[in-house]
Every structure is written in C-alpha cells, then in structure tokens.
Length: 272
Image 1 (cartoon, helix red, strand yellow):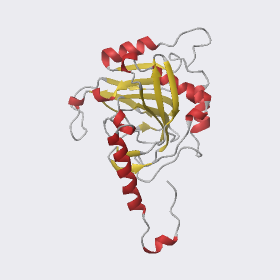
Image 2: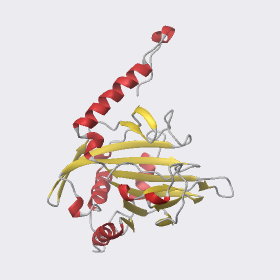
Image 3: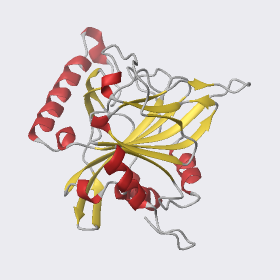
Image 4: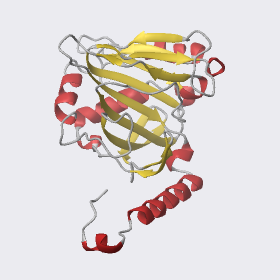
C-alpha cells in the first residue's frame, strides 16, 4: 500500500472505528490509497476468459470466477505474504465436496500484491492474527448475484466493486434474527446500499447475514457486475488439523466420484 501521490494518508482510522462500533465500514479505493489505475488494470488483466470460468455445479449458473489464497504473517506493522498451497473449497455454499476453481497467483503481480496489502491493512490492529489465510475471489455475474441472505463462515468479508453495467445488485446486511430459516426477511436491514465501481465494504461475517439483489439490465439488455469478494479466514478454513482432515476427506470423495466406470476408463478425465 502506498500513500496518495498528493500526500493524503489512507483513511484507515475511520474504517477501524466503524468496525469497532457497528461491525461494518463503507469506504472507497481512493480513501484507502489504491492507485487510480488499479481497478481498470485489474479488470483488463484478470477478468478475461484466460482466468475466469464457470465450473459445473457452481451457482449462479451464469457466474464466472477465479480465486487465490494468500498466507500472511503480521509482525507488529510488518506484513509478510506468500501464496498458500491450495485454493480448494470443501463443503461450502451448500455445495458438497471439494471444489478447485481457476487460480490466479496475484503475488506474482506487484500491483495486485499491493492491493492485498491495502485490504489487509483495513483489518483493525486489535483483530489481526499473527498468521492466517486471506481468500480473494473474482466474480463476474450477469443476472443473480447471490440467492438468499447468507454467511460465508469466515471472520471478515471485504467487497470491492470493480465494474457494473445495469442497475440493481444492491448489497445488504441484516441482523441474523431478522432472517428466517427459509431465508425470508422479517425486519429492516442494517444496511442497504448499491455499491458503485470503486466502492469498498468490510464487515464482520458472524454479526450479519449478507447478500445482494438481482442485477437489472440496461435497455439494450446488458447486465454485468465484476466484484472482488475477499475473506479474512478463520484458522479452521485451511490451517487447523480439522481443516486438513476435511480437505483430505474431500480429495478422497472427489477421486471416488471421478473414478471412471466401464468404457469410461479408456478416456482421459479432464484435470481439475
């Protein structure tokens, strides 16, 4: 992360105070010190068919995605990063089994690494773990953004909207007590906001149910939204013995499902 070229310091104290007081904060790329050209460069580089794809069984059915997972270490204000060994997701989002989406290795890109450092700096200092993992999900959606209010079951969630064509896609946070088991809302939202390109939202995942409304097409039928959904992961996501066992079980289950039957053994299976 670098300071604004005009000498303006990133507005981190506001974010930290809002997180401590209300569990979420709204900010923007310029306020946190991202370069003016970052968003355009990132979309042109990574939101391409070479990187994002739709995987069978993923939802919504027209969503394309890619992913990276970075391991981090805090030593006072010093932050060290390296690529984590896997990006696999196991038994998440009501989809059983192990999923390996397209991987982008963002630490090989100096500007993308700076972006990751910037987002990790949004985490209040008193909530920074000595080490952990940080997930970066690239999503391009055309119709539904998400289906129902939900949790990602991670510690903190950061949304950064890169592009939007069309209206709708309004992000919301609800108190969990105001969402029924069927996903119906029975109370007013804590937050309801259409995030525009350049807007950033960070929130405590355990404190809210979150989601976004459906995209509404322009008169010419165009609708699209590019967003980064980043997660400050719990230790149990990748680093605990339980996480390693769950990953092993997922690999075994996936291998059994993918095992060829009969004449299928004569064909090569596609790589994950």
